Image 1 (cartoon, rainbow, N blue to C red):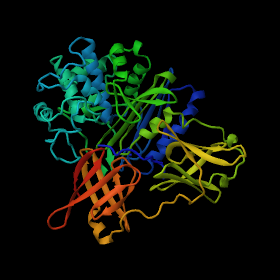
Image 2: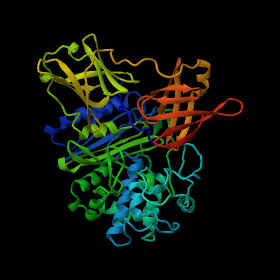
Image 3: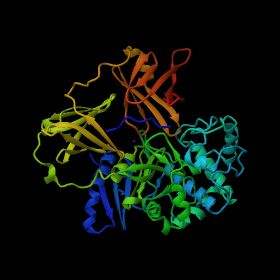
Image 4: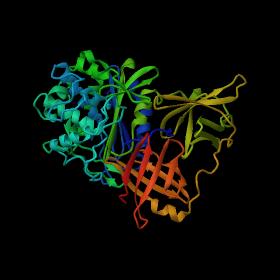
Length: 543
């Protein structure tokens, strides 16, 4: 089940639980292992999760190492590109500089960058007003988009972009560009390279001796899980000036050291700096607050500190909930998101249940339409004594009973709890997913089925729209159709239907976004523009 959300700028493979827990606790990893197995499926791509619970740690792994090497198994010491989780480390580096008195958070950024009003704090919270990537970012595709960009290039881009910034407060806007500037400017405070400053000031105090930058040719990559995308084996992403935004490579075993530091900052070598990054410093306008480098989300009334990441063939998730003494890191070698698994585990959605508790109920009790919001309805249906759920514009998913009126979704990190009135009749449900609890009243089955939407265009006008469009270095928009229905899928997200308002103009039903397709003088489709949140983001057609 994929809830409507803003569009951003993810036979069963083998699985093995590699546990360091006492045997009485080992069974608790089994539901998480099932989630990893479902993620792995038949496609190549290793995935490893590490969970820390109080003084215990456990590792779970699944997936094929590669199409031509199905026997090799990933484990705690398997390396993965961690992508944007690198921004957490970059923010820690800046916090160390502040702790040592090298600059203040509210100082304008220095370190060889043009004079401006942009501060270190704004860069660490994505509130600088800088774009995700600068206007002069080269269009090199997804193969290795950051490798050839030097510090001179980064400083030149900053000079151009700050000249166009408006004065006064700016809204939150995620920026790889800003993160790169933060890391490079901070390293300059020690007169060191970013890599050297990070090793000495952050990684060494954390005891993370085996974490390194992608592109470093002096390391052994034989235990680096090969990344994968929809086309097969993905190339590694290498970094120079943009390293602070997403360059680090690590293992789940190494990442548990950071989890333990967040759980006990006083006992970590980075105590004061770490605590500084965990405090809320900005608002995103969404379900998350913003620390320095960290997203902060309330789960069961307590803060979870998290970040995710993605490069050409990898996805990652890191989440820690100090109030419950636990955290999770998931590293995966395929461009399929893992956030739902991580947030679901933190929310307790995968905890083992006693099947005896299921009770005697009729599947007919639950059949109906349940509107989470007017444009997104969960349709619960029954077939041969089993239940399925189907969200607007999404495929059917099987439901499995885990208790009286409580069900999990096959292959999806979510739980549905049904509610009953005083007479025992089911009156509604609550969908628990991604740290949110979303209620929906029950309506008769089929009563909320939406009529046909949009303008009906001839198939011949839709065929040229099909293809792939480059929205950002790590985001491809794939457009395909089923007869007269057009679907759009962004990298790491589910396919969603879009509806025509005119020729080459389409809108989403479940999110407030629109697409405009562009053609040249000969009528050939050359690209599209995504309109969302007041932004118009172009994406040239690449195939």
